[in-house]
Image 1 (spheres, rainbow, N blue to C red):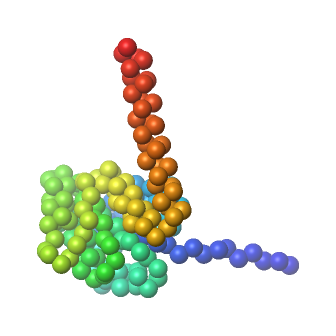
Image 2 (cartoon, rainbow, N blue to C red):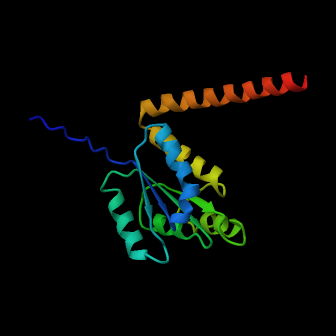
Length: 174
C-alpha cells in the first residue's frame, strides 16, 4: 500500500501579535502573504505577559528559516521593539488601535525606537497590517524573481482597478 507524505513548507514570514483579539487586524498581513504564495505563520505572544515565550520564538525564528517578522500590538505596543531587540531579521511593526487613544499610543511606541533598533512602522490598523504583508513580500522579492513578477502584476492590476472605478464614476455622473 502506497502512503503519501504531506509536503511541509517552511514559513518565510512570522506574524506575532500581543493578543488573539489582534488577529482581526493582523489577518490582513497573512491574507496578502497568502495572495503572493508566501508561507507564513501566526503566533500570539506578548512582550509583557509572556516575555520568555516571545524571546524563545524570536531566537528560533532565523534558525527555522523565517526571513521577516511582522509584529502587531495595541496600547503600549512594545512587541515590535522587543522583537527587533532580539534579532537581526527585519521587523515590521503594526500599531493596533485597541486603547482609548485609538492607536496613537501604539503608533508612537512602535515608531519611536532608539537608534540601533530598527522597526519599519506601518499605519494603524487594517491598512497597516495589509501594507506590512506587502512590505514583507517586497523584501523577499529582492532575491526571488517569482515574487518580483507577481509584484509587478499586482501594481498593474491595482492601477487597472482604479481606472475602472474612475470610468464607472464618470459614466454615472457624466
